[in-house]
Length: 219
Image 1 (cartoon, rainbow, N blue to C red):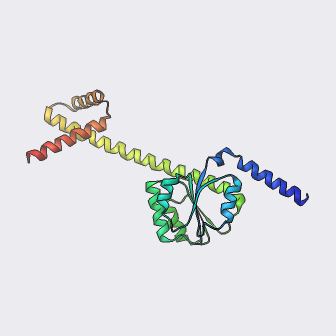
Image 2: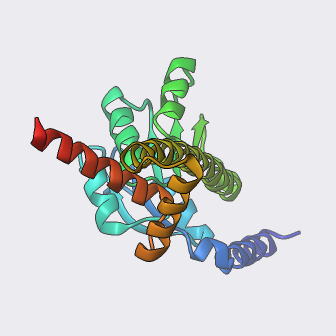
């Protein structure tokens, strides 16, 4: 195959990749040491059809830029992510969670472990291979979704547990004040929840709060 044909095939391949609707929907906030200098990573992302919303340095306020740009994914390229950067990524993971990919030169196990703890979805060491970009970003997205799903499940389980505790406590207060059985107290709670269009847990918490307020005012 001639050199010209190879170049044409390469262009056609990049064109097909850039037409991928999944890629076109992904917006990237790119962070590098020298954002004003054209980099291989930036060029590769653009060749594949990813939309770079902004290209910033590590001196910029990352959280502020995420809030302004609302990117689909955060990509960082650095020799070694500093402790300050990892702390900022951990804060991002709590306030504005999104998939995070780090391309780095350092393969220290401690650095990688701390990066994952900070919410990094993928930590890639050594040379950036353009042909691997799509799979790296896809894996990072899926890993982020899995972690978020698990986090939501844990949060929901915690909320349900707290709700049951509120209901049990509210039932006890109603039984004590009204001198009625547990079933009757539960029926009253259900009726109040239906009348107010609220959940049992919310009605129970309101009852507890009112009882605590009355108890405090009497003291």
